[in-house]
Amino acid sequence: MLQPFRHLPRAKPLLANTATRRIAVTAGLSGSFLASTSSLPPLGGTSTFVNHRARASQTANEIRRVGMERGLVSCEWLREELDKESSDAHPICIVDATWYLPNSPFAAPEGSQGALAEYISGPRLPGAVFFDIDGVATPHLAGVPHMLPDEERFATAMAELGITHSTPVVVYDRHGIFSAPRFWYTLKVAFGHPAEVAVLDGGLPRWKELGFPLEDAVASGSTKTGPKDEWQRVAGTSWTLEEVKGNIDSQEALIVDARPAGRFLGTVPEPRAGMRGGHMPGSINVPFINLLTAPPRMLRPPEELRTQLQSAGVQLDQLEANAGTSVVTSCGSGLTACVVGLAMHQLGLPLEKWAVYDGSWAEWGARQDTRIVRQAADGTEESVP
Image (tube, rainbow, N blue to C red; front, side, top):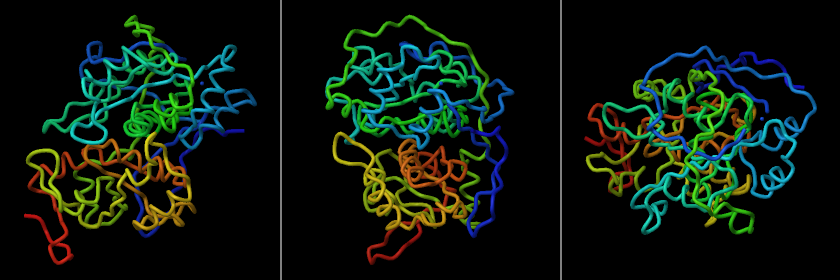
């Protein structure tokens, strides 16, 4: 039986993130409407929500927790769960968290009006709701996109999706796996959702490939708002610019950069204008795309993930023993960093040992007061002016 939440003791390894964390893992609303920026409140707000582990009985929800506990579920698993949900007090909420990256393999299809328009027109998974990654975010003074939302803004968005503290959630995107892990991280890690949250492996492409049922009719815009719970950001799950700057000297945590190798090495230009190329001193490169299969993009099998991570220098043996380095993942704008976090979690990385540098390279590479190195013509490392 799950025990009530308590702070977990943290050992002090050679490289350790000493930020205090809280974890919540338990189990159970669904609807079919949109979370959009039009109904969000102004920035600010407070909450008194405290993460905890609920005492669970031997119910269908506890059995479900076993299937979702590593944050990844198959389309086959979800189909079976949906088929037996008629009497479930806490049905799974399915969330479409698609986001498109222009000028990349993950750009919107030709003629697309955007992820929200595609959700409305369909096809989409049965009963799915839509989460706007750009809309439900805290504006950044320098224009860094989709920063984590403040507590009040997030609470309003979750109420619009029908997500309460007891709601199990499965999130997908239209790529396979790309942007969905960002919502998983936001809900489960950054806001400590007490119920289970999982990414749908292969997303909409895999669901369609298997011939599973879809909704093709235009989605209704009518609100099915559920109760508005209070949410609290979990300390230490998101690193700031200043924390990452300090880590370069302290080496408190291992920084893992999920961008493509050329961008990490500084041998190809950054896609955003005005960005310096290269990487943070002491960071290592695990391109997120190396962790995925060919379309439909699914997470690679565990042994292949292990090979990719170990070859890049991630100390999996220490991490699995819960005594390894804490890990901070970064990428272009904080999305695909969550793909790497999801992959490491499949191999045993506890969620309390992982954080995301939320500003990522969109913040770091745009500034002149950040230290950057790149690969020189002779293969050595040089500083970037």
